[in-house]
Length: 172
Image (cartoon, rainbow, N blue to C red; front, side):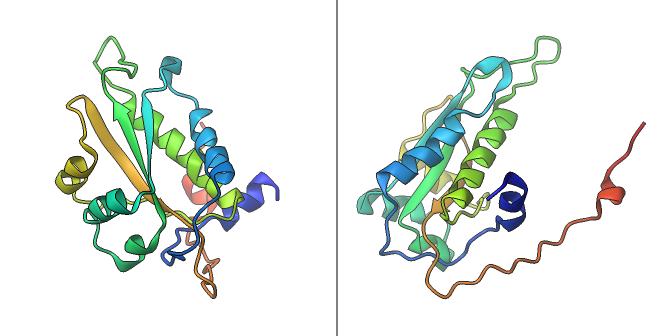
Protein backbone atom coordinates (compact mmCIF):
# COMPACT_ATOMS: atom_id res chain seq x y z
CA UNK A 1 0.00 0.00 0.00
CA UNK A 2 1.32 3.44 -0.76
CA UNK A 3 1.68 6.13 1.90
CA UNK A 4 -1.34 8.18 0.80
CA UNK A 5 -3.59 5.12 0.91
CA UNK A 6 -2.27 4.38 4.38
CA UNK A 7 -3.12 7.81 5.80
CA UNK A 8 -6.54 7.76 4.13
CA UNK A 9 -7.28 4.32 5.57
CA UNK A 10 -6.12 4.92 9.15
CA UNK A 11 -8.93 5.28 11.68
CA UNK A 12 -9.23 5.01 15.43
CA UNK A 13 -10.26 1.49 16.39
CA UNK A 14 -12.66 0.95 19.27
CA UNK A 15 -13.21 -2.81 19.14
CA UNK A 16 -10.29 -5.16 19.88
CA UNK A 17 -9.89 -8.93 19.97
CA UNK A 18 -8.65 -9.50 23.55
CA UNK A 19 -7.45 -13.02 22.76
CA UNK A 20 -5.21 -12.19 19.82
CA UNK A 21 -1.82 -10.83 20.83
CA UNK A 22 0.60 -9.19 18.45
CA UNK A 23 3.74 -11.04 17.42
CA UNK A 24 6.93 -9.55 18.91
CA UNK A 25 8.40 -9.01 15.44
CA UNK A 26 5.41 -6.86 14.46
CA UNK A 27 5.50 -4.97 17.76
CA UNK A 28 9.20 -4.25 17.27
CA UNK A 29 8.62 -2.90 13.77
CA UNK A 30 5.89 -0.61 15.08
CA UNK A 31 7.98 0.65 18.00
CA UNK A 32 11.01 1.09 15.76
CA UNK A 33 8.96 3.48 13.63
CA UNK A 34 8.65 5.68 16.71
CA UNK A 35 12.35 5.36 17.43
CA UNK A 36 13.12 6.63 13.94
CA UNK A 37 10.98 9.76 14.38
CA UNK A 38 12.75 13.12 14.26
CA UNK A 39 13.08 15.20 17.42
CA UNK A 40 14.39 18.68 18.12
CA UNK A 41 18.18 18.65 18.09
CA UNK A 42 17.91 14.84 17.84
CA UNK A 43 17.45 14.62 21.62
CA UNK A 44 15.00 11.67 21.40
CA UNK A 45 13.49 12.39 24.84
CA UNK A 46 11.01 9.52 24.74
CA UNK A 47 10.30 6.23 26.38
CA UNK A 48 7.82 3.84 24.77
CA UNK A 49 6.25 1.84 27.58
CA UNK A 50 4.52 -1.24 26.19
CA UNK A 51 2.15 -2.74 28.72
CA UNK A 52 1.39 -6.39 27.98
CA UNK A 53 1.33 -8.32 31.25
CA UNK A 54 -2.08 -9.13 32.68
CA UNK A 55 -1.19 -7.56 36.05
CA UNK A 56 0.05 -4.24 34.62
CA UNK A 57 -2.74 -4.08 32.03
CA UNK A 58 -5.30 -4.27 34.82
CA UNK A 59 -3.68 -1.34 36.64
CA UNK A 60 -3.24 0.78 33.52
CA UNK A 61 -6.73 0.07 32.17
CA UNK A 62 -8.16 1.63 35.35
CA UNK A 63 -7.12 5.05 34.00
CA UNK A 64 -9.69 4.94 31.19
CA UNK A 65 -12.96 3.10 31.71
CA UNK A 66 -14.21 2.64 28.13
CA UNK A 67 -15.05 -1.02 27.46
CA UNK A 68 -13.15 -1.15 24.17
CA UNK A 69 -10.00 0.09 25.94
CA UNK A 70 -10.31 -2.82 28.37
CA UNK A 71 -10.19 -5.33 25.46
CA UNK A 72 -6.86 -4.44 23.85
CA UNK A 73 -4.07 -6.95 24.55
CA UNK A 74 -1.43 -4.20 24.68
CA UNK A 75 -1.38 -0.55 25.73
CA UNK A 76 1.38 1.76 24.62
CA UNK A 77 2.23 4.76 26.77
CA UNK A 78 4.40 7.51 25.31
CA UNK A 79 6.48 9.10 28.07
CA UNK A 80 8.79 12.05 27.75
CA UNK A 81 11.70 13.03 29.93
CA UNK A 82 11.59 16.81 30.27
CA UNK A 83 15.24 16.92 31.31
CA UNK A 84 16.29 15.29 28.04
CA UNK A 85 14.33 17.41 25.55
CA UNK A 86 15.51 20.44 23.63
CA UNK A 87 14.74 23.85 25.14
CA UNK A 88 14.73 27.02 23.06
CA UNK A 89 17.14 29.49 24.62
CA UNK A 90 15.29 32.78 24.15
CA UNK A 91 11.92 31.84 25.65
CA UNK A 92 12.33 28.47 27.39
CA UNK A 93 10.01 26.57 25.01
CA UNK A 94 10.42 22.85 25.65
CA UNK A 95 10.00 20.68 22.54
CA UNK A 96 8.81 17.61 24.48
CA UNK A 97 5.20 17.70 23.26
CA UNK A 98 6.17 18.22 19.61
CA UNK A 99 8.78 15.46 19.74
CA UNK A 100 6.39 12.98 21.34
CA UNK A 101 3.60 13.87 18.91
CA UNK A 102 5.82 13.00 15.97
CA UNK A 103 6.90 9.71 17.56
CA UNK A 104 3.28 8.75 18.33
CA UNK A 105 2.21 9.57 14.80
CA UNK A 106 4.98 7.39 13.36
CA UNK A 107 3.89 4.54 15.65
CA UNK A 108 0.21 4.85 14.78
CA UNK A 109 0.91 4.91 11.05
CA UNK A 110 3.24 1.91 11.35
CA UNK A 111 0.55 0.04 13.30
CA UNK A 112 -1.96 0.78 10.54
CA UNK A 113 0.51 -0.55 7.98
CA UNK A 114 0.72 -3.77 10.04
CA UNK A 115 -3.12 -3.96 10.32
CA UNK A 116 -2.93 -3.28 14.04
CA UNK A 117 -5.62 -1.08 15.52
CA UNK A 118 -4.86 2.02 17.60
CA UNK A 119 -6.79 4.88 19.14
CA UNK A 120 -4.95 7.96 20.37
CA UNK A 121 -6.27 8.53 23.91
CA UNK A 122 -5.89 11.72 25.95
CA UNK A 123 -8.91 11.47 28.29
CA UNK A 124 -7.21 9.17 30.80
CA UNK A 125 -6.92 9.79 34.54
CA UNK A 126 -3.30 10.91 34.89
CA UNK A 127 -3.10 10.18 38.63
CA UNK A 128 -4.23 6.57 38.19
CA UNK A 129 -1.92 6.08 35.22
CA UNK A 130 1.06 7.70 36.95
CA UNK A 131 0.63 5.45 39.97
CA UNK A 132 0.23 2.35 37.77
CA UNK A 133 3.50 2.94 35.93
CA UNK A 134 5.49 4.65 38.72
CA UNK A 135 6.05 7.81 36.72
CA UNK A 136 9.15 9.76 37.78
CA UNK A 137 9.07 13.47 38.62
CA UNK A 138 10.80 14.58 35.39
CA UNK A 139 8.61 12.36 33.20
CA UNK A 140 5.37 13.31 31.51
CA UNK A 141 2.83 11.03 29.91
CA UNK A 142 1.97 12.48 26.57
CA UNK A 143 -0.47 9.98 25.18
CA UNK A 144 -1.58 6.38 25.24
CA UNK A 145 -2.99 4.01 22.68
CA UNK A 146 -4.28 0.48 22.77
CA UNK A 147 -2.59 -1.84 20.29
CA UNK A 148 -4.48 -4.83 19.03
CA UNK A 149 -6.20 -6.62 16.21
CA UNK A 150 -9.74 -5.56 15.47
CA UNK A 151 -12.50 -7.97 16.39
CA UNK A 152 -13.82 -10.01 13.48
CA UNK A 153 -16.71 -8.20 11.92
CA UNK A 154 -15.49 -4.76 12.98
CA UNK A 155 -15.89 -2.38 10.08
CA UNK A 156 -13.98 0.83 9.73
CA UNK A 157 -16.27 3.66 8.77
CA UNK A 158 -14.07 4.92 5.96
CA UNK A 159 -15.67 8.35 6.12
CA UNK A 160 -13.27 10.88 7.55
CA UNK A 161 -14.76 14.32 7.96
CA UNK A 162 -12.05 16.76 6.98
CA UNK A 163 -12.21 20.34 5.82
CA UNK A 164 -11.51 20.86 2.12
CA UNK A 165 -7.89 21.60 1.31
CA UNK A 166 -8.72 25.02 -0.11
CA UNK A 167 -10.28 25.95 3.24
CA UNK A 168 -7.11 25.28 5.23
CA UNK A 169 -4.35 26.34 2.85
CA UNK A 170 -3.15 29.90 2.74
CA UNK A 171 -0.39 30.81 0.31
CA UNK A 172 1.38 34.10 0.94
